[in-house]
Length: 51
Image (cartoon, rainbow, N blue to C red; front, top):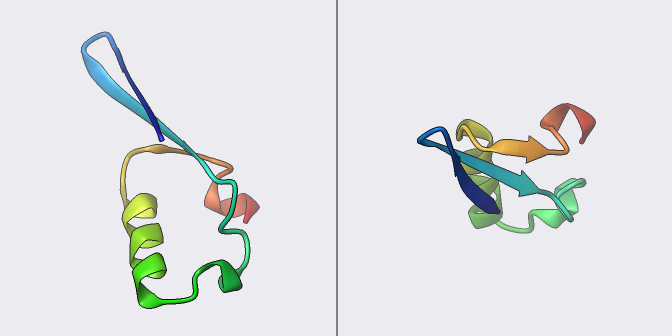
């Protein structure tokens, strides 16, 4: 994840290199982390619609 500040606002971007298939999430811990990311305001690349 990359984080920067623009005009006093925090900007964060996450780039997925994995996580495209359900087998990339072998336990509840990984699913909980993915949910945390999806519910956050971080900019996701690619977006969930591309997964």
